[in-house]
Every structure is written in structure tokens, then in C-alpha cells.
Image (cartoon, rainbow, N blue to C red; front, side):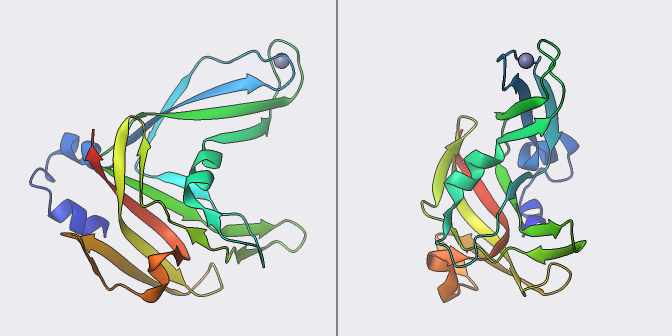
Length: 189
Ligand SMILES: [Zn+2]
């Protein structure tokens, strides 16, 4: 999927162009949960954005938009410089978004007591198939699907939209899919 995207780009040999294709620049700010004091912004770059898919056995499907919003907020145990409490909330903002936004759907749950990993089989609802992020508008264009109940093995298949047609389309994809990675193409800057 990613190789196809690269191969089709006329500027793929150019390093700066590759950044434009996939690089996400984010800004993280820690806020104290007690006194509300905020840290200076810390910027970071990556080639994909990770979205945690929690285990929701027997529950209803979870919406991608809500998972994406949740992926930008996290709490951590760290000492506040102002009041010395130990609970901070980190808020992430996308500063620069690429032509192709890759969301890596992390379905691996690690159980501390058994020291074993399992795959969250939660259904993710991909509707709506377009959204705005970092000031750009994206349209859902490909999915890498992992088939199998174990995070250690299984089979990957790809569905891809090209010229408004879906290739290797399967009944599962129209509303729900157990996805491993999603690709969104920027349709408006
Ligand atoms: Zn504080």
C-alpha cells in the first residue's frame, strides 16, 4: 500500500518530497491535573500516527473519529514542577500533516499478570470516511487488514481505493473492518 503510494508519486526520489508524503509533525503539551499549569510545547515528527484500539469484547463497535480524538489525549504519572502532584494530561496537536495520513491501529493488549499479549478483536466503524485534521481534509483510501486472533501471526490483506473504485473489496469493509493500518489521502489542504 505504502510502496504503491510512493511509486505513483513523481517526486519519490526526493527526500523532502517523501516528508511531504508521510511526515506528521505534532506538538505535545503537558497539563497538570491538579493546578492546571502547562509545559512548554514539545514538537515531534513521525511517519504515522498510532491509534490504540481497546478491547471491547461483546460490546458495540467503536468509532474511528472517537478513537482518533482519544489518541491525542493521554494521562501519565510525572511530577508537576509547580505543585509536585504526579498526574499530567498530555494533549497532542497535529502541526503539519502529510499528503497521506497513516493511522497505525494498535490492537495489542499486554497482560502484566500472564506476561502475554492478545489481539483486541473490537470492531472499528470507519464511518464517516472523510474527516478534517490539522487544517486539511482527508478521505479514506486504503486499509491493511490483519486476519487472525493472535498478534504474533496471521495474514495481512489490503483494500485500496483508486479512481473511486475499491480493489479487493470484501463485504466486511463497507462498514466494519478489523484493521491494522489505515491510509487517508489529503483531498484539500
Ligand atoms: Zn501542578
